[in-house]
Image (tube, rainbow, N blue to C red):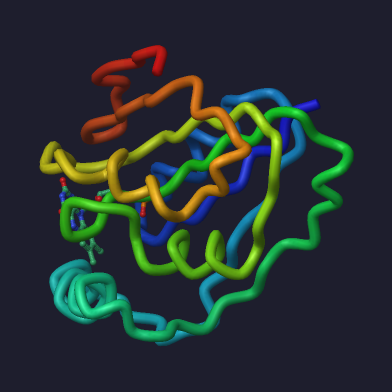
Length: 144
Ligand SMILES: Cc1cc2nc3c(=O)[nH]c(=O)nc-3n(C[C@H](O)[C@H](O)[C@H](O)COP(=O)(O)O)c2cc1C
C-alpha cells in the first residue's frame, strides 16, 4: 500500500495535482501559518523561513504508517531545497523501513532538493526514486 504525503502552496497547486495523479492514499500537510496571497511575498517570507529553519504552523495528517510499505513525498522546492513545511513534518513524523519516492515541483532551480532529504528520513528507509517536475511537467524520473 502506498501513502502519498504532499504539501502545496502556489495558486497552481502543482504538488497537489502531481500527488493526485498517483494511486494510493493521499495525505495533506495543511498550512496553518501565514496565508500570503502574492507569489513574490510568499517567496520572500517562506524562502527566508526555509533558509533559517524557522518554526511554521501546520496540521499533520494522521497516518497509520504500519499500513503502508511505500511512501511518496510530494512538495514544492523552496530556496533550492525541501520546503520548511515538509522539513518540519518529517522531523516530527518519523517512519521506518519503507520504500520512499521523493518528488519535487519547481521552476527549474532544484539542485539541492533531493540531497536535502538526506537527514530528514530515517536510515532504515530506502529511497527508490527521485522525480522532478518543472513548471508542472515531468523533467526527470531516476531510480536511486
Ligand atoms: C518560498 C518559495 C521559494 C521558492 N524557491 C524556488 C527555488 O528555489 N527554485 C525553483 O525553481 N522554484 C522555487 N519556487 C517556486 C516553486 O517551487 C514552484 O512554483 C512550485 O511548482 C510550486 O509548487 P506548488 O504549486 O505545489 O506550491 C519557490 C516558491 C516559493 C513560494
